[in-house]
Length: 579
Image 1 (cartoon, rainbow, N blue to C red):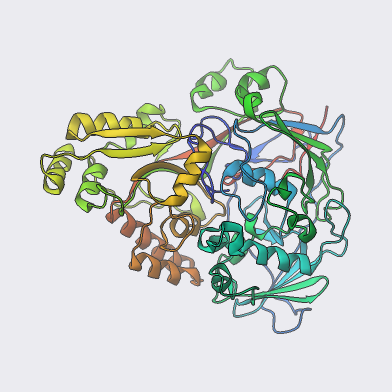
Image 2 (cartoon, rainbow, N blue to C red):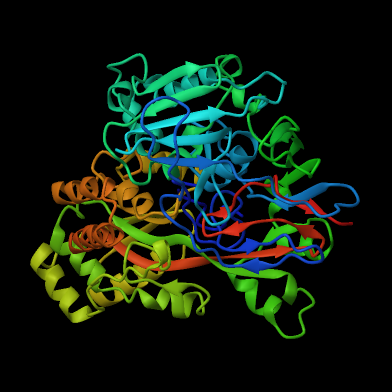
């Protein structure tokens, strides 16, 4: 998911959502460390995220043969909260674009939506899928059928019981092309729910329902897939899989401003350019929150996160890259309150192979070879980000993912450029929301290659809209994983029919390899397929890999139970305070 180029919010997606350059706040689904539940002070420990979740083989209760069973974990332990349980955080200046789970496409929207709504599955601290609104999941031996048993006393915020009919309605709504003006192929569900039987027909407007979703009784729903999908539960945990109240969501297009949520908190107040206030929902059965209120400052209230933290006005704040040295200095009083951990987030510049002049592959290769990518990390950001040599972030699935990227060679780049366009150098336009790389590229390309470059800066909302058109010639993009799997980068950004493919990239071999990896259960074989996909995309010269990021978060010592993961801050239901 994309995130804002100038901010990184504390956890999902330009969809998948986040574009960024984590300079200040990433509150939605992108982060990378875990704050434990220490009774005295928060602790940070790294996660070892998995990809598919672990379960036990067990006799089923939903009928049919069962291969794997997942049971809901016990509630998180809370140790003696004290004082007013109101947590104040810094959001982004723009605030969420939407809280409609079916339409979320950026990290801040994903973070806030995750507190208000939930689905059948969530990701735990180790980024494994576990039951959420469901108490039990049974998976058939062939990996095609998933049976979900809901908690009997789980309710929406207004007290109405959540039923299997609500689940079916929510999944069918998320795949309804009417949500996108008849263009179902642009919906996030095209990435997260496409494996469900009948989803393709539903998204294309050829079906009025999802044939792969079956209500067995009030508390049981069965989902059948078109094909075995190794990471289905990981994808189901994303926002398009969240459950909404069918009466609430049918009201009008702005229903989400007064939502009847299914998650641990409900929206109590939203003051534009000021704050969002969430209140606890005790009917969230899996883990009723200890916090009574969460205040998220947005707009002008969110412009000085570190200063507000130092003045005691907020309890949690993201830190800009250029403030790290001061906060990590040996004499800094905040040194022990700054938590740093790698994110599954990578920044790139993407070249659109369908828009002139970048439809010329030699021109794209000249741009890739004529820019010293690593200097962005080592010089521009003074080593506070990690250079990457591939599309995938280090540590994903516990691996590094190096690819063969052409080395910086300005002479070879000039030769390629001469062959591509001759002496008449065309102008290349790079769109951004404020990242540093496009400005550096402009200087280098004009100086070394004689290539005119214009950098066009958009506000974040306009940028997201422009991404959807697939018409920008080149664009900076920071992508934050929605789930811990290469699919959230490779399939999301480069599969030909992905709604999150911002450059209209199409390569049948890439599609074939990604489809083969979809059902592959052997980890080594699956990783090899992803490596092959990554190298093929880089060989097509449509992406300049730049750097991977880390989350930088200030957290007061009296805040406990906050989880920072490579995907960001996930749920706040585990947090409590000792004041």
